[in-house]
Image 1 (cartoon, one colour):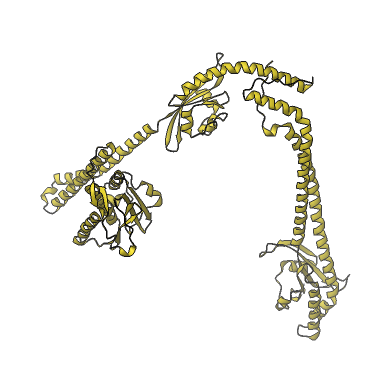
Image 2 (cartoon, one colour; image 1 turned 90 degrees about the horizontal axis):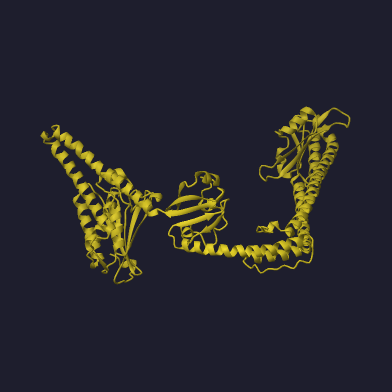
Length: 623
């Protein structure tokens, strides 16, 4: 008799289920009790608060009626009017602070004749803009409302009560406007609710503890069986459980004993096949993943783990579409229908070809899928670089060629006869030709560097002297060209700095960076050239005050054919290869080159090279 036992999750334990059911019942009961209790409590507290305010308002109405009648029958400047108003203010002051925020007495003509706030006595004899007071005067009915204070956010309860001359009289003498802080009631309810929640949590905790103790007594025999089955799952098939009963647990024990014998025989056969398969998979350079019929991974080799950056033991049992992150693109049913359709996967900067094959039984039933992962990153990058290179070179060559063709056609059409125009056209053609020659030379140099055939004649040179020489040459160029108005500021240490380098190539790097600084510096700007020592390296920097480079473009600065301002660079004869060449030269010399830039403030290029001797100097010693 063969039985199949699935791995039990913690929440499927009978022990947990018993505790869970008890806790759910307790929580459900507490929820019903708590909801009814809190709702009823809140209603009673609110009603009590409102009744207290109603009692106070009725008392004020009764006490203030004679004074309101005196106010109605006398002028504002009369002694009787002022005396009655004083009595009303005194009466309202007696009720201030009893949970009331504000109490006002208002006449039928909406004139305030009394207030409980001593700091607002100036509102007396002023006209009220209270909408509820106006409504109460018009309808001669009590008006109540609840609102939130705009400043504090607290809830307020407002009651406007008419004041009559006598209890059964229809003569309206005014209204009492009473505002109270009802937020205290809600706070009280909240505090009681918090206490109830704490008590409920304590009750639940005690219930969990008692329920767990009770359930452990029930499931102890099952735990013994569970431990035995774990040993079987771990490969120990020598289990022989004692069977002392004939109930369901006893029958389960007998089945497990029989299962251990059957699995032991089958596992030996499977282990032999797996060992042979593992040897094949280990030596494969391509990744291989095999799944069961529902798409759960059963086999994955080291190559696949390396491609997918998975730790050992992480992928087994997981869904293959989750591991490959293809859930949004395809489903398992699509894979079964396609029966071998290929897909592509992008992992960071890597490109992987996925080839799926269906595993079928002799009867034609699908038993799983095999996926082969082939890393085609290098091929994809080569193809991408090839397309990008062809596109860039084609574009860069087409621009000057198009310009040259236009001028040649113009000369061919007779412009060569014009003594003023012809030399200008020929000059443009010559400049475009020189530009193409420079670009081809740069491309050849990059090609030699990529192939490792570029010869560097390295020798011990004084970088300080070379840097000053290049700067002197640019100073002379700036002085001889009246259209340029730049200043080159130097911050260079006074001592010699010896490095092992190809002098011509390092001069080319400095030329490229300084040329860019001049191209992109505004008229009258300052270019700052610095040379200093840092640890075991010499640090060279060139800063301009130009338009800067956008932050998102900085990673592409040293790419081939990259330009921040393409139109301006072409107009100045740039090929977009100078910085790419500079980076390769600096790296070849064991150094680093990087850039920092702030948009519309300027750009600074840094070059760090290893030097033969170091001497840390103070900034005051700089030239």
